[in-house]
Length: 623
Ligand SMILES: Nc1ncnc2c1ncn2[C@@H]1O[C@H](COP(=O)(O)OP(=O)(O)OP(=O)(O)O)[C@@H](O)[C@H]1O
Image (cartoon, rainbow, N blue to C red; front, side):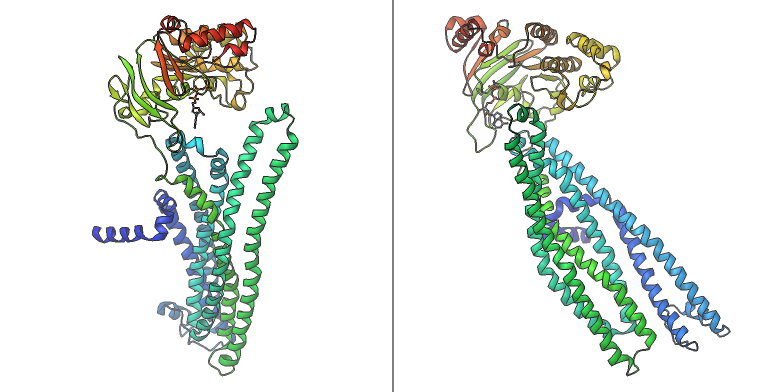
């Protein structure tokens, strides 16, 4: 039996449909039971509808010809109950009427349950898609984000998934209406196979005709997704850059740009809708023509010649009339499903794993640094097509020491520091941590023992409490207050309207640069890191704030192994080791005094900063 299952599974897996859509289809395993119930309920609804039609046919026949008993109800016991010899005509009509009512109520019950479960299936599918997107986004290497547009990703999360949910709804609607249609067809065949065959051939031709439009609609859906991504990007950029836009008085320039993207969305949607909307009226006109032709032919050929009773023709027409909107809906849904092609392609592009870089997790738990972190002949480039950003880095970072990275802007200091928490993997060479390859260490254990304090610390639009305790479980009030105190942040937090419960706004807009940094330091203090990466602020702070921050950084650094990215030489005079980088290469390393005495690169920076601070321009006092 298992072999049979395996055979079918492999058969399904090699089909082109599975290959193209497996990213979506495999999600079924999470909600297959709901999907199965939706299909069963919908099918039962269709079965009861078909049964009601057969009984209505009998009901009409008995009404028009009360003496008749030559009626096929499918079950002998049912026929015996309705047409029992002692029953009067009134009894038969009443029993048939009761049966019609019962079947109609059963149909209504399942016509309710079917769509409810179908919609739950759609919602479960969208839920799975959102969760898959999350899993994909958090497991990708950061280098992916250097190339991806955040607008495209937000558009996928928001609009494309909602669109696909509608598409999935269309598929289940297609299945539900399709199964009802099958039941109608069976009922039609029971009345007259000749008429049914003729109708089927005609409706089949209509279906083939519509297929050519589905292709056109699918093609028109791709520009809609592209324009949607462009528009979301433009929207995100507009809101994030509002300060720059207002201060640079570029509203007019931005208006032209924004209007142009919005216009592109309108045009793409117009072209898609033009293709979609053409089909319905066309299909309606063709269906009506088919219907009238079938009725006229049926009347002349079958009723006049006595091959079909008037009651049966009436029922046949009744079924055909009920079938017409269904046929239109099924065809409409086919077109609609085609229109989701662009969204499916976009989501597939994001969720595909084969063409993306992931960091393979290691297995060894990291608890603390015992000896050193060693960089051995490390090269790194952000993308294989780009030039390397780091070349032949050989460096030893000793436990408990402060290693300062110095160099001009773009020299590669941040990139080098980012390799330690494994935000990226070296393109070649190795990084060892206490002799173990960094790639063999469990990433979460490594990162949980590290803290990064940088000028770009992300502040969440949540309370001060949430921002400081971020990523640490169960922090009591006393520890929280103490961390804020140590970070010299307590005074300004208590001055805020709701103290630790004050919400800080998007990206911490309600905080000054210096306050953001102190929140970041408090966050790092709570983590009690073993390894600390400090990316010093390049923006000038007033001397009081600078002293407060330096003080809190000194407290934070105590007992840690520190990698400090320095922009002002004054902050690294006490470092155990200074590493000077130029264009991605280490040009010298040693203690601060050794390098100054050597009169090399650091000495040149030293001279530059001295002369610029003498010229009283603090901006020039930085590397
Ligand atoms: N995410 C990225 N994708 C592609 N290239 C990048 C990325 N981040 C940085 N770079 C490039 O890598 C080089 C080194 O950048 P890095 O940020 O490491 O320099 P830095 O020395 O820290 O500079 P700064 O002092 O200005 O912060 C630069 O040329 C930069 O353009």
